[in-house]
Image (cartoon, rainbow, N blue to C red; front, side, top):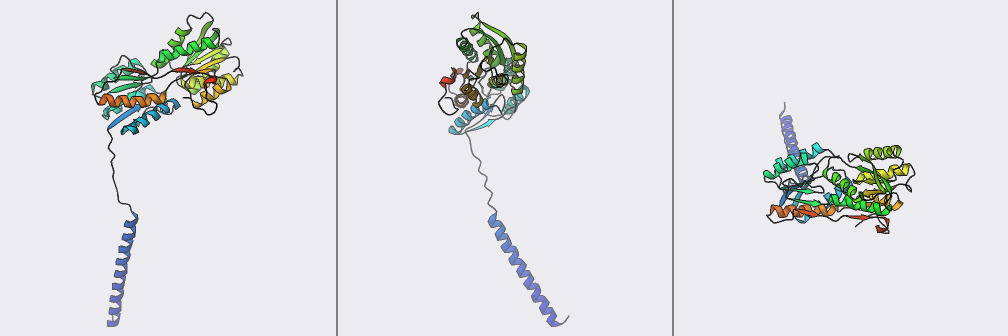
Length: 329
C-alpha cells in the first residue's frame, strides 16, 4: 500500500469513527430526551377497605359501590370492590377469605346465609379485622354493625301496599331471589304476615329466581300458565319485578295482573310509568355504601357505632315519580 493510500485510509477511518460517535451521541440525546423519567409516586391512604357485593354486575350493588366510593374519596380511604361477577355463594365467601388473608383494615359484606356466613365472619373478626354487614344482616355473628334495609319491614310494607291497591282481594304469586338468603327470606315473611289477616288475599305460589333474570322470567311464565287464577305478583329482588313485568306484557295481561316489585332500577321505573308495575319498594343503596365506609372508619378508630342502622324504606307508585327523568330520590 502506498503512503498516500495509507493516509487516505487513516483519514477515512477517523472520519467514520467521528461520524459514528456523533450519531451515537445525538441519537442517545434524542432517545433519552423523549423517554420520560420514571416516577413512582405511591399514594398513602388512611385505611384499606373491601366491599364484597352479592354480584358485581348488579345495578343495585353498583349504587352501593357508588356511595362507598364517594365516602372513600372524602376520607382518603383505599376501597376495593370485589366479589362474584354473578351471584355465587362460594365465590362470595372466597372473596371474604382472601380479603382477610390480605390483612385489609376492614371488610363490608352481606350476611347472606347464617350457616356459611356466621362462622366465616366470626373467624375474620377473631383475626382482628372488623366486619360490617350491608343490605343483609348476619345478626347472630360477631359483625360489629349492620347498615341497610329492615328486610322484614320492607316485605311487610309491600304486603300492605298490595292489600290497599287490590282492595284486599287478590290471588298472589311470589317470586323471590332465594329460598336460603336471609334478606329474601325476611321479605317473604314480612309480606306473608302483612296479608295473613286478609280473607280475600290468597298466596297461590312461591317460586325462586336464584337472582337471575332468566329464572325470574321462567318462573313468571310457569305461574301464568299453571295458575291462571293468579292476578297479582310480588317480586322480592330487583330483577324479579322487572322480569315479571316483561312476561306479563308478553301475555298482554298488564291491565289484569297487579305487580309490586323491589328497588328503583331504570327498567322498574319504566314499567311503573307504563302502568305494568303498580308499585315498588324503595331502598337507599347509595346511603348504605356511604354510611358503611363512615361506620367502618369509626370502628377502626375506636369510636362507638350503633349495632344496627336501618336506612329508609318506602313504597312508591306512578304518582310519586318526578314529572321528567328516571331518578327517584
